[in-house]
Each structure stands twice: as C-alpha cells, then as structure tokens.
Length: 472
Ligand code: C2O
Ligand code: CU
Image 1 (cartoon, rainbow, N blue to C red):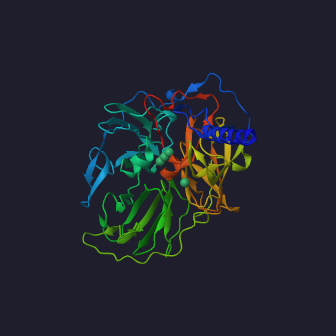
Image 2 (cartoon, helix red, strand yellow):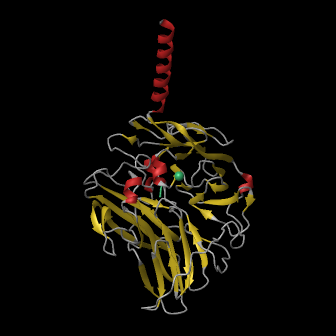
Image 3 (cartoon, rainbow, N blue to C red):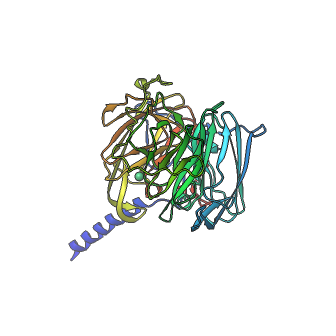
C-alpha cells in the first residue's frame, strides 16, 4: 500500500515541480529571466550604471519632423472599401506614412485614445537610442488609456523603415497598428519614390491599405524606387513584370553594385524591407492578385507568372569593405532554434526552444560597448523564423557555411528557413537592453524571444506590473 502511494506522491510532486518551474511570473525584469551568456568575452558586473530610461534621443532642439499619432481600437475601411475590425493611427491603417530627411530630428507624440491593452511605437529598423525603442516592459511602460508618450530621435540612416506597436504586438500589428517611415538621403532626385507596405488584414492581402491593383503615376522610362515593406508574419514573395529591375536596398541599407534582375523574384523577410528600382512602366506583385502598377495614368501592365527563382542576396552585387572586422570578434554567440513538447507557463504544447530551453529560460546575450559580435543562428525547428535584432544592423557572413560573396548584406530582419544556419556579425555600438526575437509575432508570443544587454546598463522597467506590459 505504502509503496505505490509513495510513488504516486513522488510522481505528482515531480510533475508539480516541473509545472511550477515553467510558470512565468506575473511581473519580472527581462534581466532576471533565463541565463546569461558571455560569448567567450569578459563577464561583467551590473554595478551602478546607466539606466535604459536615460538612453534617450536629443532632449533639446526643435524637431524637423513633428507628428501626433492617436491610437484607437475600432473598425475602419480599407482604402479599397472592405471593413476591418482592428487598430488605427489617426483614424487610418496603415497609419500616416512618415517621411524625414537624413539628419532630421523626429518627434512623435503617441496618444492612446482607446486601446484597452495600452500601446507603444517601435521604430523597426531604425537604430534609435534605447529609450526610444518602444518596447513595453523593456524600454518604456505601455501607454495606457488616455496617456501619451513622446519619442525623439535623429534619423541618422537613410532608408525604408516602419513603425508598429510593441505592446501585445502579435494582436496589435496584425490588426493594423503600424505605419511606414522613410528617411531620404540628401539629393536623391533622379528617382521617384513610392512606399509599398504589404499587410494582410483578416486574410486580405493589401498594398498601401488596398486590395487589388494600386497605381503610381510615373512617366515612361523614369526610374522608380518601390519600397516594399513586409508587415506580415511570414516571408513575402514579390516579383516584377514589365522589364528588368534592381534590388537597390535591403532593410534600410543600400546594396553595393546591384545588377539587373530578370526572371527572378525577391523574398522580403517578415518585418524586412526591399527597395526595388523599377523602370516605368512596371508592375510589382505581392501575391493574391495584389500589385502596384507604376506607369503613366491608365497604363496597364500584365502580370507575368511568378518566377521560380529568387534573387540570392548572398551573391548579389559586389563586395565592399565593412565598417568593422568580423574576423576579430570579441564575442560569439549561438541562437539555436528548436521545438519540443513541454510546458510554457504551465500550458502543455509543442513549443519553440532557444539553445535547447523553453521561455522564460532563454539566453541574455551580454556585450560591452565597442565589441565586435558574431552570432550563429541555427534553425532546426521545422518552420521559418524571421529573426529581428533591435537597435543594430548585422551583416550576413555566411549561410550553411557558404560565405557571402556579393554586396555587404546588412539586415535587421533575417529570414532563417528551416534547416538553415546563418552567421552574422554586428558592432555593439548602441548601448541598452535590446530584444532579439522572431518577427513572426505569434512565435514571439509563444516564447521565441531573447535579449541583448550591454555591460553597465540597468533595467528599470518590468514586464507585467502596473502598466501590464506585454511586449509580445
Ligand atoms: Cu518589429 Cu521587436 O519588432
Ligand atoms: Cu518564428
């Protein structure tokens, strides 16, 4: 009698213990979860240092671009007429298309009119100072009903970016709480420019908020930069009809020596951007019959079938010197993504793992300012993951052991397909606490989230807590 009872108690006790260790506390600092990795560099103390809250953009100075954005949860009509239940900024989704010139001081005042969960704005791909990064519970508290928050940063790097809420982001971004931001370099007058933000609202693929065909007027023969922004959770396959084109930029960084592309499509990482330089007339398809036609008014460009092949950025363009030497790395990390059965916050499931462990037992990658950092991303999880590091651009060194031989390929969002291994490198030049997560935001919600922490930076914010911060 006693032996089976004892076994049962042990078993239940064991299961209970296992269950309890999977629980995510109702409030915690991202600095306290998981385990620290130093990547072969020096371990360091988190003694007195700078707080995330103090790592702001310029406090003084008149902004060159000043925008007020009011967030609402409501139903709205797409530009093409369909009614959507979701989120808007200033009554529309996508929110206002922001434009700045390189070097401008940008000031955005975000007001939460009626989003019950609270909101923030993250400047995806803009390497802003940490306190302007807009991550609830990491770089600020969520902006609750009736509150406002001011973001100020210098638009240092020209390129195509976007912004979106980083509070309950898996629901808010899907529901439309995002917009685009373009930073123009001085004197880019030889091309015309159009932003093509792609988003799927309740199963409807849109470009610039419209299903179907959108037109952009451009006289015959003019070069037009089509800034494709993938705001969805999965990779976007896009292709051009009507003539050759070039991939001018990826993730806000110009490619070196881009060549004419014919009969190949372009894959845009979830969260990523690709600037396609087309010549009018041309048509850019983004799937589901949704497309942008560039040409004189009334011009019709027939879609060619989607090419089987896609531009390989590992070999596209010509090499150029980098701003740092990845061979002299101070730290090397692994970001190994897997999947296994287990408990996540007490819930049984088939969950993502990072370096073998389930959230919240995820790595905190520690660096010091000035470090050259290498990271190997290995995906053996059975699904594709668009990996997004905040606050930095990383250069791709190799894929599956094959070195990059094309233009320097800088990314903030990298499509890592199942079975692939990428080596990337970046310079740790932007102190703070930064998210490093999957931009399939449902995956992030399910624990595919890690962070990068700089020596000497302290974290005043908490996930959960009184602001109910829930970045994913
Ligand atoms: Cu576009 Cu952490 O996000
Ligand atoms: Cu993922």
